[in-house]
Image (cartoon, rainbow, N blue to C red; front, side, top):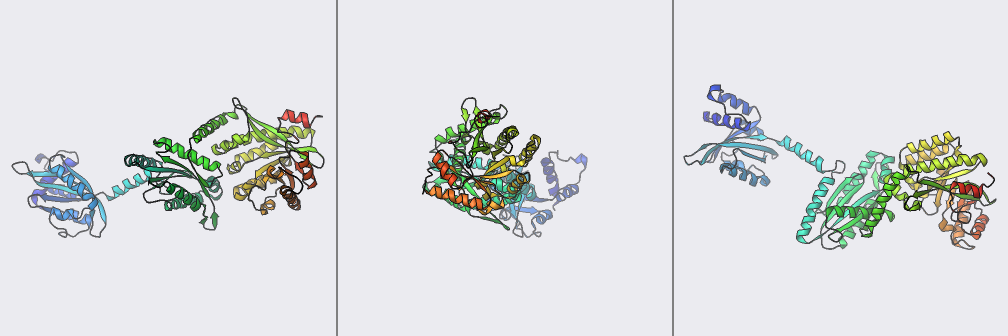
Length: 586
């Protein structure tokens, strides 16, 4: 290297490092500066503007894999190695420095290596010589390989803006893109659609098959969603089993319907994970800009409310936002807030409906039915709050309270009437919860001295469709202590009859839709008779629900039905009224 290079270069290096230029009194040799720069993985360049010739050090060539002299000697030769996407900014950075706008030239760009790869490069330099009019004549600087730093920055950016499981945009990036798309839609007077997508019963699959399978299901679902939209649309995962889609630049609103139905059909296709075949569906809520709202926050709430409407309509479908949903959402929120206080304030009550033995007319069983004594709304029936309790996770707390009240009442009634049996409902959401509730129920029975057969656990027919290991384990634990199992609303679901023996079912409850309009020669009577015959062949007893007339009772008795309950016998009653009516001698 030329002897004259290292003096100016030492000044540059000191300035970059925030130090004073080395003085003659320190007697620091140019050789030591050379060693410092070359030993720090910096490639040195010396550019003479009057000739456009550039000297590049051995270390510079080594960084990019070139032999000494292999790269042309001019600055233009070096510029041909800069990535096309970075070239314009690099040229502007050098112009700013030559114009005196920056004390030190600094620029980051990608440089092409000899093997064709690209390295991110930090270039720094400064003017070290000018003519008599102050115009730059010579620049000296360094090139540093910052590829690893750029990779780390890119990874940090990815972690901050992309979901680690699906590699889709996360909530932060989604909201940023949503805001940008709204601005573009405003400028161009275009519409866009926001979809909220929730995977139905994902938590149950995650709990029963494990988190690894759950993660794979999320990944595959994300890929399927990407296949349903255009490259210009955005698919994001907000968290849990919730995805969002932004459909932009809409001209044909029918496109939204087509995409929504395609998503429903695509997600419903089975997922194959090794030997396990997994089935899942999706519920989609849709809101439109600017038809429904113009603000991002309101649109997000709209889509969320529409998604809940899709779930309430039976899942596996989509629903557009309507203004009436806001009132329903407010009521749901208020209900959830009030429910959290209900147990603490003693507002959860249990009423009891008798189950009558048809052959004798004797009341030997009752069903425990939850009621909410709301201070403002009065007595609230389960249809108005159970779905909210399941969605918020409060169903476990409420279920515990109902069971505790029912079990204590059973213990009292069995003292006077041995053999009395209480039926308690247990929703599918309770089966998906942890084992604490299960053990709590069994511990309470033991503490009250109640035998297992005093309790009948009533489950839905649909639960048997998703009877994975956790459900099976809980049902078996009930049977192990002698508790009985009843299937509620039998005939309204799609369960296989094989499950009736697999799970040792003790009672079938014929749904009231079959007992309604029951008369001789009716199809409903034929169905009831068939259920009774089948159940008895399997050693299962039958309870008919919704019996309201003596004619219905007589037809069911003739058909061989074992038990019945309904308004003919009694509405659900508080414990004291139940005792006064059905246990008058107690």
